[in-house]
Image (cartoon, rainbow, N blue to C red; front, side, top):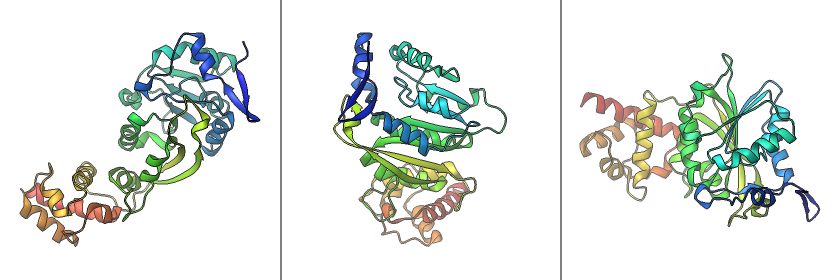
Length: 296
């Protein structure tokens, strides 16, 4: 059965619709499944990932192998993570057809994967690829931040709006908790945009491919990173309120007096709002509040 299509002159992936129908399957809306159909998008993502024959790839949400087969050609090894077990037989067929013998399929959610369990040579870090479903995109980013000691860089596809929020600068409406957390430990940039027409089923919005390059040296290291992330979460928990009010009404172990003192010690106006603070200011604020919390 011929499954390769040409749409408006563009070479496409093996048709996801035909592949799914062959096994009486449907794309699962609950899992946010939108499969790539445009082969040029897959080639672009892998190309911009700067893979070498020595790299080990962790792919999040391998699906029907749209990225997997290209990553397998470019890298030494690929760990293909797929939570939907009904897709595994189709994925295996696609990999076998492309003779991608360097791919190991991991049948679980990425959020339940312990990267320490991967069979990695000492000193090896991962290049992470993925077309992320919207419903877990934020959770995946937080997961990667916490596990970044295993990761060199990531090239991930998000809904365009989320990609813009992640890479937003301070003093903008898009700047938020994820922006600060990621920019604390990585450089981010949008590599390319992908139209909704490149997927099946077609989503309602366009997507964007974001590069996350984790830093070896943090420019503004916090004394307690876990407390920093708690502070960021607290500050944006009530982002329309002033910093003093948002932090006082949060789960941080400080009362109004402690918050006021911490803001003063950090040299930050308590009337400012979270979206106006730079990463450096958040690190300074976290250190000041953390010292007071330890004393209390």
